[in-house]
Image (tube, rainbow, N blue to C red):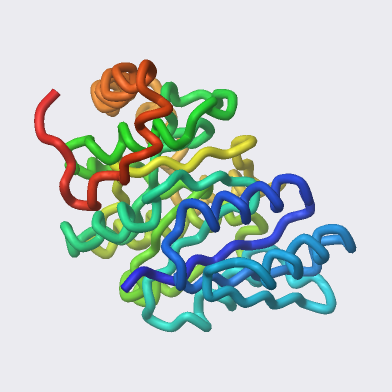
Length: 285
């Protein structure tokens, strides 16, 4: 069974519309999706959501607060409502590529120690492709999905999960105590803190190199969040800076690029064939 997909609705109507269309195209029919709106969407945004709810093949629900509670508190309450279930949190300005959720789920199935699985993203920091600095939206996310699905599934360690899209293991999230809405105002920082607490309890934050989710822009912390992270985790800034400079995932990035390039000449034919099943990545280069 696929996990619940949680989408915190933002204020960018066009991005939300594109995200929901991509979600329909890239996610198996019947998947449970919950749009949570912290009083963010305007009239056009709510109209987009209502029209989507009427036609989507997904099992979708939408809830909206009458007044804003705050990004982290709102998301934490939604995660807690999901109990011990695994939940995939998808940014509302993200464009999930075909197979993204099945690949993340397969990542969890391969290694029970993985608490968070993050796919590649053009604006994904430590999980960024083709580089760690933000890149434009890719021209062909379908091609990237096909190339990523053939990657050998090694699931290397990330310093922390990244907010464009992340699958969270419910049991690990619950044991770590959920999100800290009292200390952080942004999902960006709260997810980093949760990742570090889960890591401290023995779980892993992993890259799912067999999946790709594009995003319009890179996430960012709220004012004061990075200072709060530094107080609780004094080595965090040096750790993430060192990871980005050393780029231990460089070979994996290059490998994805090599697997992508041969497909450029047969793009029309590629669309006729399904993605390889999750868990059946092609071994070797």
